Image (cartoon, rainbow, N blue to C red):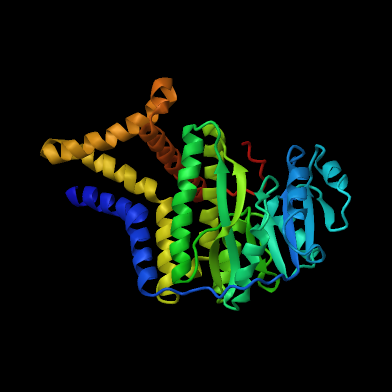
Length: 378
């Protein structure tokens, strides 16, 4: 039981601290630079939308106003059976560079993107969410890495706007800072594991049509890596989105994303072979699969620690530390006074994310899949 306790703690530390430290050490020793240049290939920006009347017009106009040659930019919006004024808002934008498609009946975001790609003409395909706002130079920064023939996929930097400073908003922002720092290091050793679906770009000839139940933000970059190209992070290509502030909305989003990611890992399981892909498989195991299974190590650490309570002060102290963290997360829901404490907000978000992963894993074991989606509510 002692081995189980300390083994679980070691795995938790490896997942969140050890792996990032090893990647940074490897990047410092054997960096792989990206050959960038100010290029302007023809680009199509693809936006899948379902009932996004409140933000779709602003998003499309944001893309049309980017600092990029107008004759090399196209925007394709696919309405996935929207029942509000989403399509009317797009039609009201009088610009020949904008094309509106309707997918009926609803088939989900992935099917919408497949449809949009078949109707697009860009050499580079850029994926934007319906509420993603790019900085004026974001597109130029995003495509310049394609000057390197080894680069097949580029993801930008997500910046969450969090005006209310709730635990969810703080958690989203802190999580993205952590992920972006890790992606920067992963880029330096070859490819990143995981991207932001709101500001991604891929070479058109590398796009592979996906099943409607597959997660495009995960399956497509894995497919590009499997074809022998690099998937890299470009921190100067910036988008802003409003973060979620309701814990229920965040939880449901995390369950949905985790579930689809688990299925993606199953579909692309050949990339988990350490014999065939030693570096990339190590990254995929460490950054994704073990991260989604962290709830198991957290539960095992707490349970084995409770069993060892009578073994002395060390075990009692560890148990109280663990229990105190979980109690703090629980208190966040009950006592408004503690919600101002940053450490309590951290514990709450950490527990929320891992509970969502556990929930998704249960759904995965039951064979359940998620195809349709609803818009994020910031």
